Amino acid sequence: MTNFTKKEIKNTFLAMLEEMPLNQITVKALVARCGINRNSFYYHYQDIPALIEEIITEDADEIISTCGSIDSMQTGLKAVLDFASSKRKAILHIFNSVNRDIFERDLWKVCEYVVSEYMRPILSNAKLSEFDQEIAIKFYKCECFGFAMDWLNNGMEEEAQAQIDRFCEFHTKMFEQLLM
Image (cartoon, rainbow, N blue to C red; front, side, top):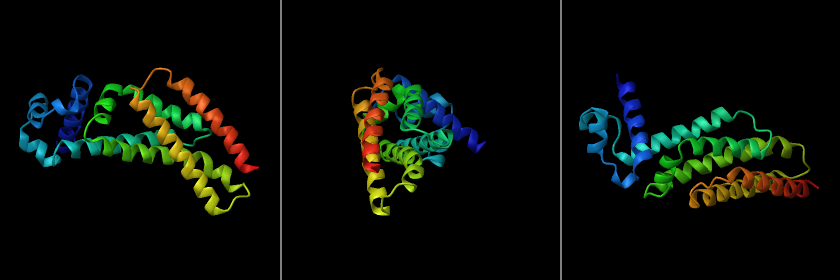
């Protein structure tokens, strides 16, 4: 019953996030909509930010586990884009809230995964020192994170896929130059 209750709290919270900004969601409204009492909510979560953190962490882990091996930056970024687009309103409500730091931390984790999974096999065959390899990964991770943040700041605009394709073209050319 515990897992069912947690799942119901999460699903109800996400449904509410699709309808309204985070600052309008209260524990009282959430439990009323779930049909549970406040004690049940507090048994599972300390507060709404703790609920948000669990949801975002699970979503980040899901993106990573479903991505599998990444054969290009486009593959990884497209997986993130598709996932985010499927929960657009909820993500924007969290992103534009005081709990944005939770979201950013897990976005950073996903960007690191995408870049590392793509670059490590390529860099292992390059004539770069370990230090330079780590710097290259950090650089591209920061670029991906910045790109994602810009996309979110602009309300997750529709033409993101075309921008991602062009972004990746730039990175491929820069990456090829790095390996020369």
